[in-house]
Image (cartoon, rainbow, N blue to C red):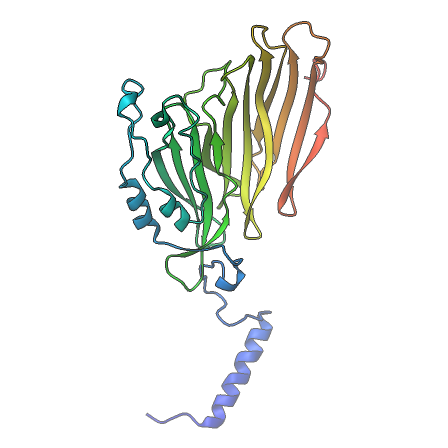
Length: 315
């Protein structure tokens, strides 16, 4: 076969430039190839880099001796919890609080591992997913500890992540629970929901609190908040109270504050919260009210716009 004349190479190159110009394309190197993206090591703040093999880490903490919670035989509770702190420290998470002195029987205050959940969070655009890690503990007295954080894989590394924040962690005292409406689940539940885009996940946080412990003060407080990752950090988009009422026993509650949350079908989703205050009996301090608050996703965060409440004539 005869080799092409080198002079023709120049003509071929010029022809390629002309053709691309006619097509209106000015493509950078690698154009047309979709590459998964993740945070660069240099972009991760100092002290936020986490080096861990998550599957092995999960197996290790689940394999530690943790104690069943059995209110029938408190004398069998151990006085000392397993050393979870070392494994929590590998993720940069705070140690568990010492609750052994809060109960008459110290063993009832020992925190027991309940569950470890690792959930992928889609980032959109074909990028490598973030990881939501949630570790739950509780004791026989009803106290709970949730240690949670979001990890982002570091580009060009294996088993290395950047911690985007542990603000989803939560503490619940033994008496810090609803006293009017029965609640059997965790004090804080986490779930994944598409909010900003169909291929991008946000985190829905539902809190069930209040007070039903020592003293005459009683009440419930239920709330829902939405969180997401913006500019490589975990942020809270908004929080809404879905039900709240307080009272001094033996008097009944005087008012109920409630909120109903609705999401639009378009992207990014608009969040509408219908808030109301209901007076449950005659009380000079209670004023019934209704308000509709609408949140729009603008500039990487949700902003609210107050709207007039619906009346019987406008329904």
